[in-house]
Length: 439
Image 1 (cartoon, rainbow, N blue to C red):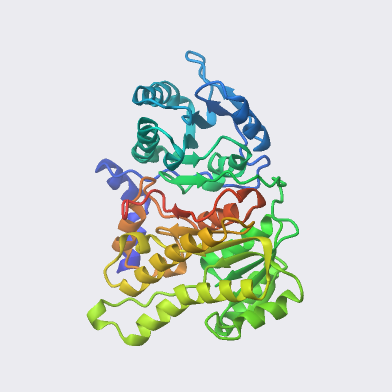
Image 2: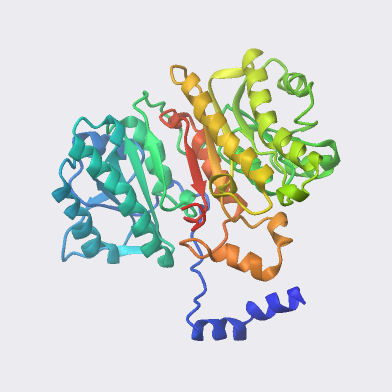
């Protein structure tokens, strides 16, 4: 019955009925298809770039032009540098620029707003103005979502080279399913990178890599030049081997919760160090708390939370992480907002965010970084099992009115894995189309 309803829903007649009722089909998002440079089109600037921002744009390989009223030119992206705003009155610049220029932005385009980290501001009014950028970004993202346009915010401690990689990412189609989100960039010295193969020469380990989001992460890291080791449970070895064969990767079939897992990883590394560690392996075991068996609770916390903590610590202690290692964990919107029947899962994913924040503090004076991705509704085999109407509601409960793809999560992971992302540490980036849940 469910399949019949779904078939009718997506039929031409069904879509016509929905359109007549005011329910529009979401715009298909443009995603990265191997373009070089990543930001292929023109980026319109709200004002003449400062010398510091000009250097960033050059480093990021971004072609830009200052907005000129009365001279419309279609563009792929827009950038406004609000980092110099110090007074409330200067926020008028947001309204003036976007009301005049937004019509030039193509569908599925990208908007980025630059601001100073409010914590780094000396004056009260300046800090308040910078915080105001966050509310503006979230609201404008909801207005522009119907056009498939993303709106994001970068907070920085200073306009400098560390901005190049996150700016390039948010202005490109690699970030199409990310909207209404802030990224905080510290002032660490930027590491130059090859924009075509930024992970060339790097070794990455992806847990839960056999299928779904994990397989997409493995493929994306390989695309960007990394040698990938895919780890999954022995029961998934056939699927794991197939995925690794696609990308000339290495399979490691082992239990991520076992005491010997770090030794298994060490043997596969064969004397090399690990540059990128992606903690993607995870499970759900849903029941309301009063009906949840003990093993549902324990399995979920052990796999989703305890394993990433243990494995990261063991690899660091064994000196198997490179000096500039990138660790990326997969959290969840459920960990931010909570969900009925998922006390175990939400606790584990919220715990992942706490692990990332604290580990980032411990690594702040090193070359290592650790960050997390919080996916929203992502189209996977798991979500295919959800009843149709529940699934359709879940898809549409975000500003882009659609579910994300596994590659959307993978692109976020690839951002944090890049050498040029050393200014990103302790972040929790939501890949959710600006989900209304937990907003």
